[in-house]
Length: 240
Image 1: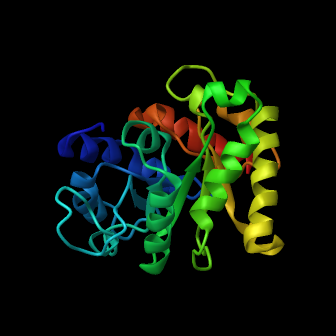
Image 2: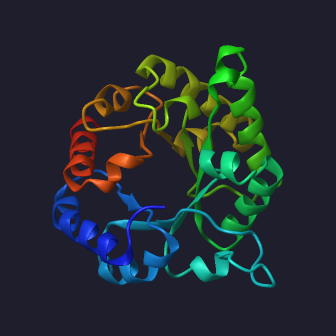
């Protein structure tokens, strides 16, 4: 919940030209709902993708304040689902996220599915069980997950300045890819992209991107600073 419409346009304007010139990296910007239409226009013809931060699973109806996949289709290509803040602050459970996942795929949107454990769950040795439950729960009954992106965001490393080590992240990513193989088939699991998200900055992202099963980053606060975000993308281009 950051940036007014003018601020969002200014931020994208400060990054657009340089982002388009960076080779070999897919970039997707996910602003608040109020900025989607304006940024869709500003990015028309650009390779930079656009995504929403959330959506409801119903196509339309008496759901005041919600935004449907039908409303998003045509404005953006991606939608973030199951972000840790949606799970924590708004009580979104696996069942609801599964409904959103199925609706997004049915309407041709590419879900960026977030999974991750809290600190107490990690300290109890429950990290793998938690992310497996979240991943299997989101995918249950879903159509072919074409375009699905999975983002691992250890909740204890978000906004705390405390990041997981690259080795920790790789271990979890390899586990997630194995579960994806069981759910979707091995070849599909290898093709799906896995992102790391947890206090990612231009100063710490490189070791994560060098790990075998980490294909990119889900960037939080650093995406609000043009030079910081550009630095992350530039490093991804060099490494990948």
